[in-house]
Image 1 (tube, rainbow, N blue to C red):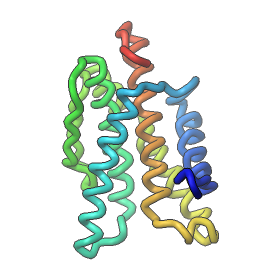
Image 2 (cartoon, rainbow, N blue to C red):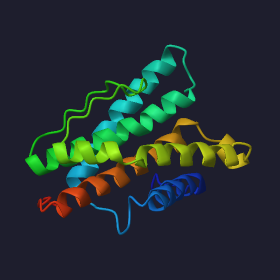
Image 3 (cartoon, helix red, strand yellow):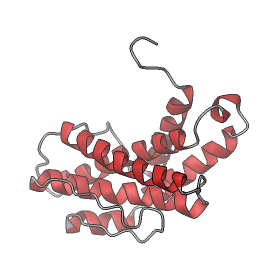
Image 4 (cartoon, one colour):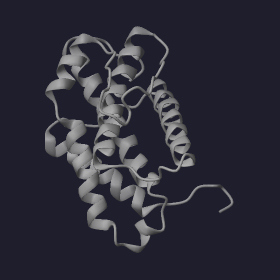
Length: 181
């Protein structure tokens, strides 16, 4: 295509699975937050994550275990809380990749978000929705034609966005003004 864009049924389907999981869990009720600062944070985080996984691929490890996939969802969930905290505090993001694949994820966020995020199960719901979606579509021609990291990262991207929304809604409910959303 001349413009460099394409349409992806796979991406749309996995995004929908994430949004439905968030709505089903009760974490998301209304529209998602939109912020140029959070969009830039998402881009920075995902470029780092992709670079880490590409390095892993170069070293011969081309697949992810179920535990590693679950860890990735928890990781982006935690990083969303950090990104919103940094937005509120006017601080730059400094995303470390500690715990990305081993589930030992430090959380550097507003204490209200830390406690609240530990109570919710959004990361688990999104991870399960992704695994279920993938299992239901794995034999499909469209999914088989994709690099397996693309639908996974589409799901992770939506988990991040949903988690940012949860974080902003929590802080706003606590009376905090979140700039730029």
